[in-house]
Length: 237
Image (cartoon, rainbow, N blue to C red):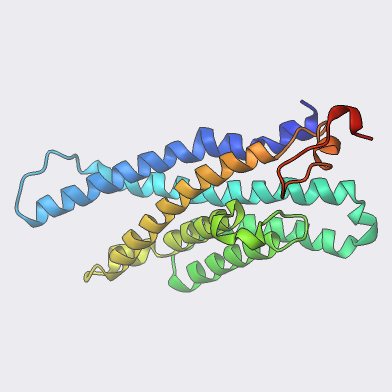
């Protein structure tokens, strides 16, 4: 593989090796935490250790940051590689500078979101992080499958990342809400996020099959993807 092909694999490699195992751990700890809470409510003595709640919170933070980080990485490669390939720095230097600033600002906003305690600042940094992701995803270099948004790896990923940002922003509200309304919202949204992650695994595997090595791209560009045919080797010019 060329360097370009290796860099293209960083996003799926990190997602498979790091993010998806975290998803399994978070789901397990969330289930145990809920079971322990229900047992305590019913007056039962639970065999589930009290530490599962804090573990769920800590690993959930790791998962949220990882999902956003992988989303940023997944957009960074196509954006910057295509900008270099098409000499966008010379043609649109202001947009290149804007994109670089957006990546830095989005990353910084996530870092500050981890540290924010007041509801106002949590809302501000969550909003900045989410808006940064959306604007970066709107760049023309990002492949989105707009006509197939209902089965698009990009749209599933952005939606999951936004849900992770929102989950981080409301963590303190969950523990302060005695009526458990925020906890219910958290549960419902993260069930939806889990469905999106399953969709990510399928659409990601599909897209990996669709992306050729750099040295194969010139040949595959001549294929007819509508009729699912490619020119015979001897006829390619």
